[in-house]
Length: 271
Image 1 (cartoon, helix red, strand yellow):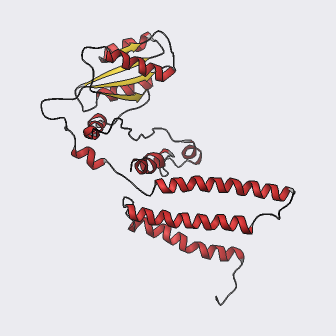
Image 2 (cartoon, one colour; image 1 turned 60 degrees about the vertical axis):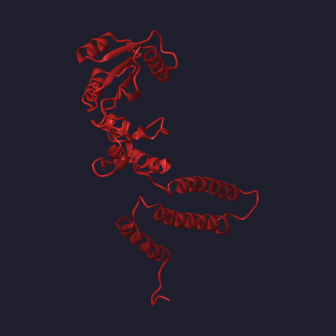
Image 3 (cartoon, helix red, strand yellow; image 1 turned 90 degrees about the vertical axis):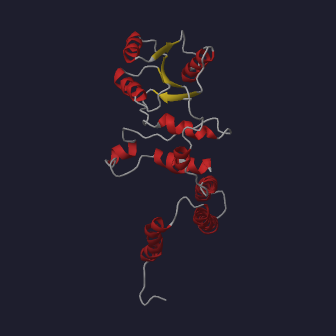
């Protein structure tokens, strides 16, 4: 027993101290790629979440009855319960982690000497301005992989874009309608490619406002050394601050919300 009395707030803060200490210490000693360490951490999180739900359901609800208090407290508890179940699924997924960086580095050139995989790089566009498309097209031309064809798929049917593609020596493709929007635009390009005498070995797709890293094609192709792999999705980063970063003025110190999805959730799903 403590030699002094704590208020409820003080008691809560005292219990919070070990949690804060663990939050500061564990990131420095835990290997986030270790499956067993991740299982232990998320198992603790699941136990604590179950304990919280038990407390909410047995200690905090209004007395049973047809009263506004019972209806409101039960509805809120039900929402928390469903949210917690969804969180459990995320915890289970994130118990494993797979980083393919080394795999991409080790397997480049798996197709053997004397052959360079032909890649069609599709850039689908509808109404983006030249300022956006120019950056994407020039960035695509700067990719290290040599045997590539950059194809701009213009659903806006703009003559100025056709002329710009001619200046940049990239392929320009348009269709007569906008059926099925972007998916239809890409499918039309795939059909055109399939009818050629020489079809590409691989197809890559960029959004109109994407500037790919110079090693994008090279490192992505390396992951196709496994014959079971048919599709590779890569992470993306944003030039512009997301709404939270922008509104709070913390774009230089706070990661955008997509970082959790690409840096944590996707590697766990891959595992």
